[in-house]
Length: 131
Image (cartoon, rainbow, N blue to C red; front, top):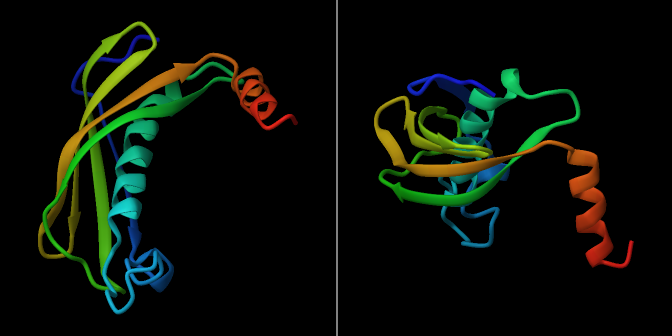
């Protein structure tokens, strides 16, 4: 895959009650939970790769370094952006950032690997469970 360094993609959404710290078990904390922020950052990086993947291929996250900078309440819109920093074969490293309607809420780096045959990859994973 030939993707230019600096290529970006963005994803967006709205924080709902199912994506809060409260929903993750931190009772009473009704703000966008860190694991969901990370998921959004991963989705943005995946969106950079997706148009370039061969049929049957996919990508998986292998590393996240992130600072969660600000809390976002339920109902607020959020967006995440990934920028390709470097690549080495099947490995892709991104700079990632996220914002709500008022503040930058996260920043960091995320690494993904391209899996040429996702079906084969998943079959190997299922064998771990005896499936």
